[in-house]
Image 1 (cartoon, rainbow, N blue to C red):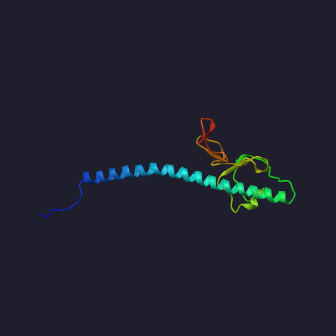
Image 2 (tube, rainbow, N blue to C red):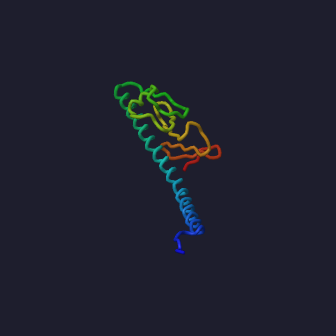
Length: 138
């Protein structure tokens, strides 16, 4: 009788075990990459919105008018349906949630519309994470 080639059950289980370990290592490594990408996206979008606010305030001031950006104290996405003077300087609706004081001062971006454990926030002073009931600088 001819001998048939193939793998034993033990060899297959060992290969699957090694692949499982490698997949676990990759998955753990990806967690940091996703968080870093979120932070970069938040900061980039904040810079665009901040420049839009500045451009609007400069244009209105040059026209000898008083800037009229009302404060926004509730985190909200900036959309085309809002009647914000600086909205015309943005090409798209924002992905993240924004708050600001009068005239767009102290612009803050947040990753969620509500404050929950682990929420991220960015302003001109850096990143903050909400932990144990308070915003902690990262």
